[in-house]
Image (cartoon, rainbow, N blue to C red; front, top):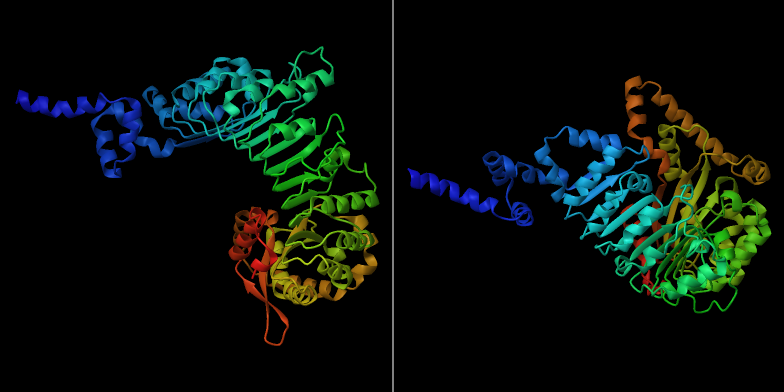
Length: 543
């Protein structure tokens, strides 16, 4: 019997003799039944067997984090060893106990791959060891630090991981002053990054506080280029374009959100980014960052915020046309380009005269401008020779419920969209794929209604038919039970935020006519996504 007891104890002792890393690897290969048996035999291993629930943890705030771990016995704290993703979405309450607990969790999270911390400057400020715990993580592939500051930017100085994705948002309101981004760009942790998102980077705050802007910006010249970066997103920043182009020589996708060139560089732009594939920017950004690199995909958003109104409509249109001409995109996206009827027609006339040979085009048409589009603009659009056309019809919305949104979408799919598809297919000979969708305009535009009143009269018939259809459907719905209506509205809260669209393939019939044929949304969206990222695609290849 003593021998039997010894034999029974030996396997357990041998299993416990393994390191924690080895235990995690072994457990990942066990079946669910074996995991339950293991959990029942040894309390010390029980926390490791609950790995599935703790591969990813996300907390809305510090108190949620505290409650989660206070409800668990102390021996379960080392479960952080199994964490692969950890998110704390709000750290603004400056809870020191939460910061200490978070630091303890991260010290044991050697397997962590994805870390998101909001208000990280406040957390690191009240508990500095948290910054060291983040720096000690060795397997991070994605790091997102929101509302950072001087303490969090210094984390990169000693960081052991080499993440592929870094998101850093500087808090412009922190009391310690502006942030010097030198520790980030001098760190070895950034050498392998492929996707870099930076907000609040002002080159004037590099180096000593006594340095003038020119001396501070010259510090960037000593930074080594980062050839691994393929995607760069810059927001709320003032940077010299010349140095950014030097730092990221292999950049493929560039996004600008309220970015200015602090020196207004107006030199030679031909060789800014030979590798640039996609450019997404607000119109105002392009007026200060004068880019002339040829791109495959150009997305220009109408300037909003404080910068809106700095350019007159005619100046905006002229600059937009010049940008398209200089960048020579294969795919052009104008996701929120909204003009009055007269300006709309003039813009497309100028654009069609200056650019051509577009493979893909994405536009927004205000509902009030739709009659004018069907009569005039579509002919100008045909001169651009698009093979793929994606149209969002901006529909004015006034307290529209999800149920009414579905009704309007159903009417558009069965009446308006088929008519438009047939018209566009006949008037644009190069068209092969077409997408039509509704996009809700929650604010509405009273000025646009007044200016487009005459044009809007032409669509009165359609409006009446639409109103009748909606009235019939609402009348039928009155008989529904009140509980069903509430459940329906609660279940469709996101209905207002989603485009209602359909796709068509345009083929040539035996009679030589262009006939649109409905295809699945998945097929159409997949084609458009491929078009955005495949630089080698030609119009003749889209069949």
